[in-house]
Image 1 (cartoon, helix red, strand yellow):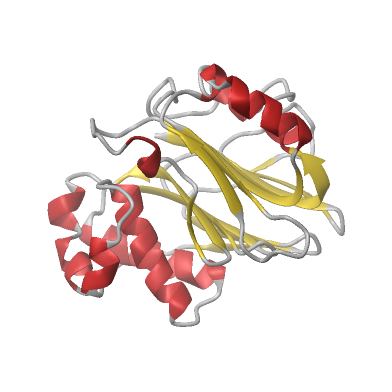
Image 2 (tube, rainbow, N blue to C red; image 1 turned 60 degrees about the horizontal axis):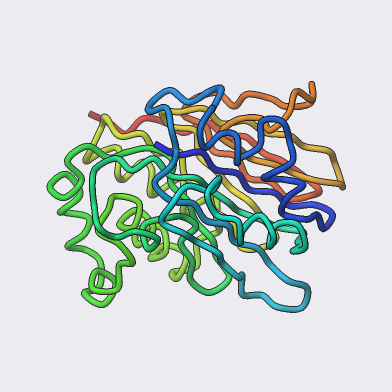
Length: 251
């Protein structure tokens, strides 16, 4: 499992969101408060952010735990952005992909993260993988369920789906083939942030016209945080937030 967060609002230093809060992503890497599966998220981490005037996000990813990277502590103090997506990773199974398996995944303007697991994903999702272009399969960043999920989402984005629709349709499709999956997905294009609650915790903090945060768990004890019901799609901008139920696929 993992912990992840997406923020859009006034530009803030990465440290304000991830490092300084009492229960920020840094602390969630070793002491999460709402994690239902796994206990320590030390198998890599990553942060993606957008700079003014550039539609393509930058990323910083590492294979080790976030608490052991002194370079990130320095970077987080000075880098500011109005839209950020970050994650700390607890690997579902052993692998040698290192930082390539750490979210966020990226293509064009999009950043993506997966909090969860797809049991026996190499066989359960084989029918979906066969429907992808060969180039997409050969171009997977890592050999893990999250990388394949990203390829499935990305195909829909390239076909013109909005970020929320791409997540919702992918979750329903994957759940139909692997019904015991945990599929908390997180996606942004730099303006809109979208997430699914499907098997693990998801929280929102929304201040109209000011900020929207979607996160595995609150980074502080502000009473404005709201827990998202399971089987829900959340789509948010700084101006609006919409929660929609995600129906289970037919048996």
